[in-house]
Image (cartoon, rainbow, N blue to C red; front, top):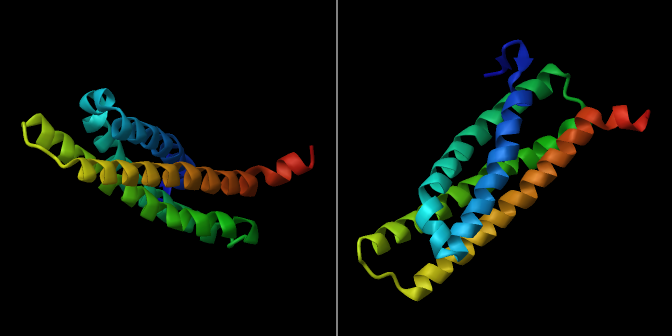
Length: 155
């Protein structure tokens, strides 16, 4: 998926990750701390977490291809290094949202879930979601500087 309709795939795919990652993170936090949100949004949040987990490595792979195609410019190094870590943070978000969905399912079926387990999972969801928000910003910011920094410097 290096080229999509004549454009580098990375340029198109990164927009999915930049939108879905933070959206999923915000929904995950809502589901973790507010039971009404969890009842209504947990399955959407889980689907978005899985979609983001699938799209992130595709975006990284297409970015690696673009990096080589551009001649490995040093200005892109930091973006690439940060981007390579995002998949692990998104994976943590997907795993914690899955755990939250399991808790929701157990409770919906009338089974009890210990308060300590619910609290630990909620904290882990918030940590993974916060990590996703922060790292998505960092990757996006360095990518934007790599792509557009010379344009704004000359303005």
